[in-house]
Image (cartoon, rainbow, N blue to C red; front, side, top):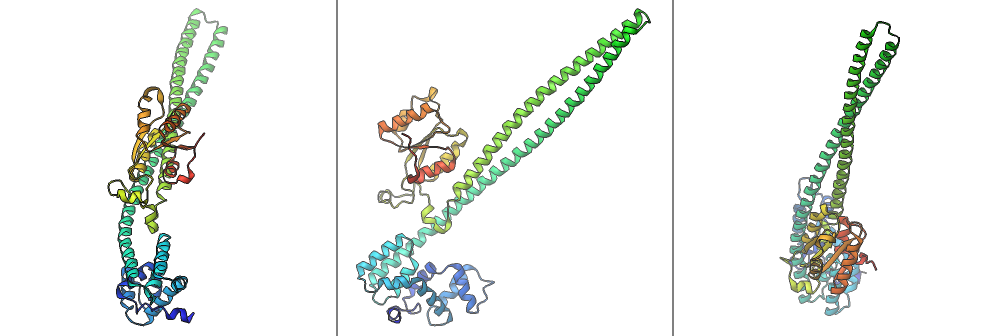
Amino acid sequence: MSDLMSKFMPIWKIEIHYKCPVVGAVLSVEKHKQILKKCGYNIKEMQPYEYHQQIMAKLYEKNNVSIKVNNYLRSKARKYMVAVQGKSEQEMRTLWKEQSLLGNVGPLMYALVSFEDSNIELLNEVYGEVHMQAHANMTQIYDIRQKLANADGAIVREKNKATRKREEIKQLVETQKAGFEKIQCLEKENLEMEKTIQALTTRSVFDQGGGKTITHLEQKVTELESRLKLKNEKIRVTEREKKSLQIEVFSIEREKELFENQMQALIDVFDTFDIQDSSENFLCSADNCSSEDCRKEKCARYQLCARRVFMIGGMTKMKPYYKGIVEKAGGRFDYHDGYLKSTAANLEARVKRSDLVICPVNCNSHNACRKVKKLCNTHNKQLKILSSSSLSAVTHALFKQEHETILN
């Protein structure tokens, strides 16, 4: 193993312009802190960029800091140091291309730039590629942070909507409770009136005071019956109001459930963004995406870039969210609600000008599904039949081709 290491220069002996990209690609922010702390530095008042400055200032000679950095680099790059020994320049270039596609950049770069027999042209290519990739990743990271900030804003707005709906439901429940208590009070009054009428009727039968007394009692009974009729009418009105409130409460609860589902779908969708791996999740747009790159399938979202996505069916209220997913990925969005009685005439034309057709079966008519499948077969258009119309299902259908479901 000592013979192996003798072929590789320590970090303080490699070319100056290779030091920074090697350290930045291999050492995490936490590792910077650990090395400085072990070497006696006070890191409490330092910012992350100052960790890097302090370490880079020590890599021009052999010292405690440079030795610890070099030992860590070699521990990470040992298998690549073994791999490059005895290889030709072309074999090294092939190894670099293979590993860079897998994201194994830092350790292999250290092995190449510290190897005494490495060709200078290969080293310049490696340095140039890493340098430009750093610029590209920085742009993508800030773009994804902006998208996440927008998503957070949308989630906050949906939470506020849900809070307002809960307050409305609470008020309606309190109103319904008051109405129920009012009905109970009226029913109690009616019962007391009926008892009074019954008592008066019984007394009139045994009254011996002549026709005048009976007439007076009859008038009182008539008056009580009239009052009873009014009370019964009030009860019927209150019952209708109660039923109306119950219907409204049910409607608001359903609407609240829909808002909560939308909010959760938004969270699920934007959780897929990972700033640590921005090259995998960056959504390109047709405005800044090179068509040459797309033909070479270098584009991060090659399957959506400048493509027209036609969705038939789904939840109409969710249309803005479907559209947002497609257009943020660089595509163009077209929508049909799935009801063919009044808008079937232009369905074929919309299928013909589309690149991808999406049809969720849970919010669609069977006739619409059969019709759009037939049109896609006729015009050789890609069709994805989904079992759900949720944002998560639509997103997976757009970007994960291996999970698509086709109904025969």
